[in-house]
Image 1 (cartoon, rainbow, N blue to C red):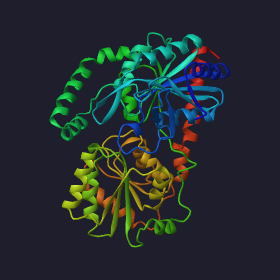
Image 2: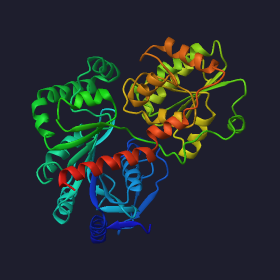
Image 3: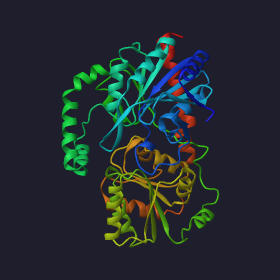
Image 4: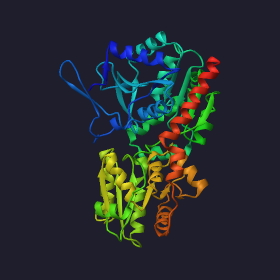
Length: 454
């Protein structure tokens, strides 16, 4: 690929971007969700090593890159260096995404953790590279993605040594320094295997008794984005920095309502008389898809339905859900699509009569923002920024976590509505990357002006 950079030319390109930019930024985050699970999409970047071995990277679906791209596109004065530790990188590798944005992968190790994967070895190459940038361009802001994660905490501890006081910003992605919700704790423990329960309890014990240490860990944090008001309250226990509400966005150039919904449904093979219920998420227990299947079993007694469960994840979870479908005699009513590419996934959203989200805790969630963008009615649990919006705007229906009867009733009520609210304009103003990028770029400029009095 022509935009692949490595070795000396990568560092030179970074220096060039920083020298031309009014404000220089480094954002550091862990692996993207696309790499954490099986059934990955086709890679959009392939790097050929000297030994002819190919190393593939997934950039398009990386939230960290989309965050940096949205900000850099909204303000050309910002020079953005997006850095990730990555198990796949055998050496420092980078891609020039825009004239003022480079994304860089540093060699690292990765271990499995509860609910997915996490980089906990920040690697010498990552730290050395960050130090080199600060040596060359000292007036550089650093944004740590997921500062409450294990990776985020370890990284902050290291960068506090060489990043000047006040230069540190962070973006919490639903992560918090300490788990305090007893309800959430019980739910997590219920869904885990015995071995994982013991690991989780040990981890929680350490976190609780390290609370004082963690408060000192975030002392240099100057600014923090968080997705929800609940998250803001939690972080106030650990830092005195400025905390602003924000969350991830969606691509408004892609996620739009269908031009002809009836024709699209025909093309996808959906019958006119059946109501299409869609859920799109990673297949893990905390998404509570078994509750959706049980609710659908109640609904099908009154309405002819087709339940579409889209997403990839743990094979054991998919096996469990498929067994439940078989036990309930719903094989003809439920479709598991597995991973669906974005251009095809949009069509499922556009064709659906209702989108359902059942998770007990979320920051966004992004899937619900995409549903709003396509004018697909939402039924969801009262979580994240979208749940708050629906609660205040009445542009969807909420139901309590775990209540399958309330879920079924909310879906039936939504399906029986003759006319649903148009939500795409609201979604654009609140959650499109265009809107998010402008807002976060302004935050960065304000922080820079306060620090350097400019």
